[in-house]
Each structure stands twice: as structure tokens, then as C-alpha cells.
Image (cartoon, rainbow, N blue to C red; front, side, top):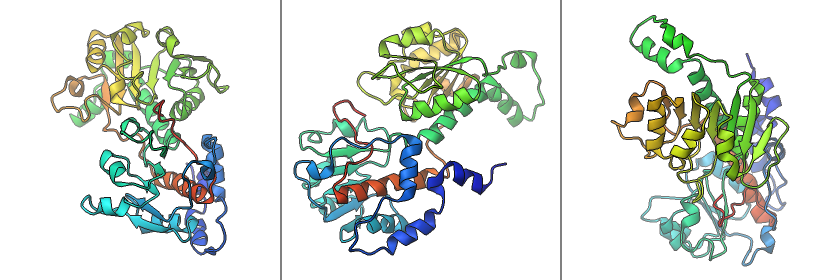
Length: 381
């Protein structure tokens, strides 16, 4: 059983969170805050990347005077104030007064929608409180105004990866069947159910999208003794625990090797509907499909058909298309499907992790340094 000390040693950014935050809050307003050591540890652990251009070198940059923050409690606001001394921090209110609040704000945290962008005449940087920014990057004027966009990419890798592995293991060990028997009060050891149970060790997992989340999935699958292959958009290179990395054009060939496929891709124009009939036809018969990314990457009708035909042995879905899934949709009643309601990023550590990044990015912006997790708006992630 893991104790708190072992968790803190594995994730040093968790240690002393309250104490370090209190010390930051008491720091002199006249001195520029230094990087929190916990942020340094988190950057190294998750491989966070800084932008190529310092914020002070961006057109129109100036030290901010107002930051508007959504969905933050008093503790988080104090955490941000400690790294932005002298800057007015405003907690976003209801929609009626929000346009007035954000009119002169240089920074928006947790706000990226058409109405906010239109009202925020002075905004230079938007920090989202989520990873997927497919809706945000499509907003008219975002790119044209030169607004920097950062997100929580890689931050949600650990819990989402564990969720993907949990879904994979649950399908392999037949938990959907046994959960139904439990609810019915039945001690049932049907031979057909037992015959479907598998071991994942020695089998092949294809991780589609070897980014922050995909890398964490691959790391955990490798630790289970799986052979891991993957695709990524940029290069054929990958970490030592990934046996083979292909480009998008290799997807169908790699699918034929996989016992388990995990979708970890961001949603873009190119990835919308990529898991279609041709993909499921290309998969190794009897494989599992796990989706912890975006529902619209999947042609739902093709997924249902593959499950009904037996081409797929099962599916674990944290996201669906449409979402939420209609009450009478066929996927709900399929015996070989596990569905969770888009909760894969949730964990007891996630909020502290997210706000540690946000706080470090605010410190960097105020100091004119390069930001972490800068989104390529044209690329969509």
C-alpha cells in the first residue's frame, strides 16, 4: 500500500503544496517571484515545453494590469496574486457583468468563447483550464489579433492514461459481464464468459497520438508487459518503451498488429471521423478499442457495426459522439462496452497539478518569459 511519502517522492511537485503557497503569499511584492521548485519538478516529470518566443518580445506585450479568472476559489486567487504582485485579479462573475470585467484585461484564465473574445479588447493571452482547444482555435479573430493561447496539454496525461489502462484491463478480465451479474445478485461462472478473459501481457497496444497523454498510456502499457506501437503527427521517433512509431499514413497497417487500440489524439479537421469502417476493418479481429480523447474522432455507426459483428471484442469509451450519448443509444446496452461520462481527467491530484501550471505561466507572463504549453492555433493543438 502506497503511503503519502512514497507518492510525494514520485511526484515532488505534490510535496508541501500548502506550505509553499503560504510562503509565496508572504513574499515581498517588490521582488520578482522565483520559479516554484514544484513547477520545475512538474515540468521535468511531464516534459512540458516552453514557447520559442519570450512574451516580452511579442508585439504589444506589456506588464499586465488586470487578469480575469474563471472557476477559482480564494486559495487559487491568492496563489496567482503571489506571482503577480500589483496586478488586479478579478474573479469572473455571471455573464451579465462579465463583458465589463474583461474589457480591459490583458489576460483571461478559463475563458475562451466568442462573447468573451469580442468583449476583451485588450487581451493578449488566454490560458484555458482544459486540454482540448478545438472550439477555441476556431474563434474568429483569435489568430488575427495575435493572441497567445495556452492549454493544459500533458497535464491530464497521468489520470487519463490510468483510465485508459483501467478500461483495457476491465474488458480483458470480463468485468462488464461480472458487474451485471453482481447487480443481479448472481454468482455466475459461465464458461463462455471465462473463455473470453485475456491477459494483456505479451499483447500489442497501438496508441494513436503519441503526445502527452499517449506517452503516459504507452508508459503504463509497457509496464504491464505489453508491446507498444504508436502513431504521431511529427516524427517516427519515440521513447524507449515504444517499439515502433508510425506517421498518420501508417495507421491502418499498425491497426492490423494491435490487440488494443487507444485513441489519444486531439480533435482536428484531419482527425475527425478517422476511426471509420475502414479502420475497424483493418484492426486485428477480436481487438479492443479505447477512446479517452474525443468522440468525434469516431464514426459511431461504424463502431457499433464492428462491435455487433464481433470484429471488435469490446470498447471502452470515456467520450462519445454524440455527447452525452442519448439514453436509448445502442452502445448503452451492448454487453461488451464500458462507458464512463467523460471523467478520465478527474483525480485527487489533478486540480493542484493544473493550477501549478497556471500559476507558473502567470509568473512567466508577468516576468516576460516564454510560456508553457503554447498552442499552435493553425495546427489546432
